[in-house]
Image 1 (cartoon, rainbow, N blue to C red):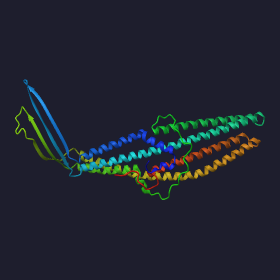
Image 2: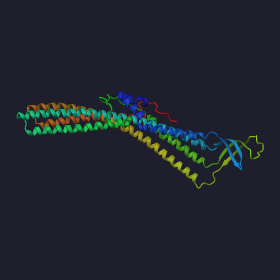
Image 3: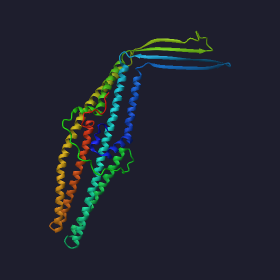
Amino acid sequence: VQNGWLASFEDDQLLERAHEALEHNPDMRVAAARVQQAAAYMRIAGGALYPQVQAVGFTTTSSKDGASTDLSGWQFSVSWELDLWGRVRYGARAAESQYASAEADAFFARQSLVALVAKAWFTATESSLQRAIAADAVTAAERLLQLATTRQRVGVDSETDLVQARANLNNARDAARQVDLAYTQSLRALELLLGRYPAAEVEIAAGLPGQMSPVPAGVPSELLERRPDVIAAERRVAAAFDLVGQARAAQLPRLNLVASAVDVSSDLFVLEENDEIKSSVGAGLFAPLFQGGALKAQVELRTAEQDEAMAAYAQTGLRAFAEVEDALAIADSLHGRETYLAQVAADNSRALELEETRYRVGSRDLRSVAQQQLALYDARMALLRVQSEQRVQRVNLHLALGGDFAATPTVAAR
């Protein structure tokens, strides 16, 4: 990944998964094929700038009344259109811009795939950590059930507390099963991105990456100009302008220079100067006088495509600014929430200890303990969700900026 923004998470496993996806994901093969197609179109369009050379050889044998005759020869010709109005040059430049656009689209596809892999990786890691929290909840519920069973046997608690403890345990087990399903689904989603068979067998990190570095102040908006989708949209605008010029030039006359050399031999016809090669040089003028308005309509079509490309370019720019603003705003909100939720989790943990102590000495019933237990695990889940989302939004920010926070290009515009 250009500029190494993925390495800023300091997760070697994530880097390995990103390279695996770039190598094996089917979408990358589609993007590569499109670049190859655009390169071929560029070579085709550029070939019209050069003289066209052709060679033809022929031989025939015919028979009549038992006699056979041979006719053979060859022709070598060269033709070249004098691009007086730039029609061919417009087409070649448009093809070059389209090729650059396809390259940028492919680069953006790679960046987007890596971003998807990173976000799927964080989601799968989050699900794995949620499983640990759910397992803790089940263990705590089992411990409460054992305590309620003992207290009911010695006559301290009623059967109601015992039934309630059993219900809390089953609720915790049900929540754990749901988390297990979410974990399995997150692994399969990640493996699909990696180009693997979705068997939910990929190895996940033990925890989320460590604390991320703060976003530097004063990041210039010019960084958005390096975004591959912005470059692709700009190149499509350039191609659209050249295609309009090509359509307009197609309404004007064309001048071709032609040169040829011919040699024909036959034992049936008597050819003058049979051993001498015939050569000719000339010029041809083609002027489109009437084509039912097709050429004018072609200009109108290309002009409309140009308007569309310009509007799409503006839309891409606005979307780029919006994505950066959203990522920054969400990241700021998540940072504040993490601070609050960390304190909430700590307070709920302490409150649960107090409630369990009061329950053991008989000053609280089981309901208050169960409620406090549920509050604690909800707080831990919410804190984990925010921490995972912080890393997802950092990925979104790098994708929105087209790379890291340094003002270095990621892909060259043509």
